[in-house]
Length: 234
Image (cartoon, rainbow, N blue to C red; front, side):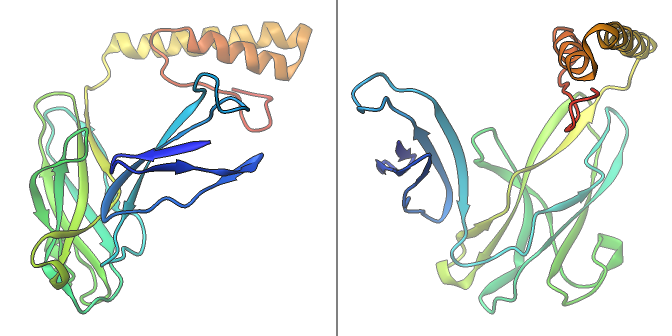
């Protein structure tokens, strides 16, 4: 097993069945690619997996971002509340906590809203000084979109540079369902039920769930489908 990062660093992982390795992390996002090679390490590269690890050495968030709601219909204004907890830190520049928009590579495009821990319920905060920073924003999107967002903050440690990034979260603007869409959804559900029932009669629940899942995934209007954890239904 080998690993490499977008910071031009690389190394090997050790283990048998379960692999481990020490990867140096830098402040901000670290993209790590893990590659499995053949047993003698001379054959062609095999499976690769990529993970982005965000390292915030100067500041710690207490949990993931909470945003509500997370979606709205195109053309309809909706007020969204964003909240995130930050561990007590005397170096935190409280006025720097804000939501930013980012592109597909997670580069910051611009500021969206400030977040504050001031107890101002008008702007979304409930309790002053509890470590939860909040803010509101009204989205009115004219077209279908997925807006990528992050919370960022600064400390006195690095003179105004962004010191901490939250995970990426998204707000979606979606087109309303048409009558044709609703009819198509109903038709797919009915046909899936018919397929499941027919297979179940001869091959049992598990096989019915597996084959019905395959049929659903073959439909151009179906994005995701799968059996339940027990494998008896879809």
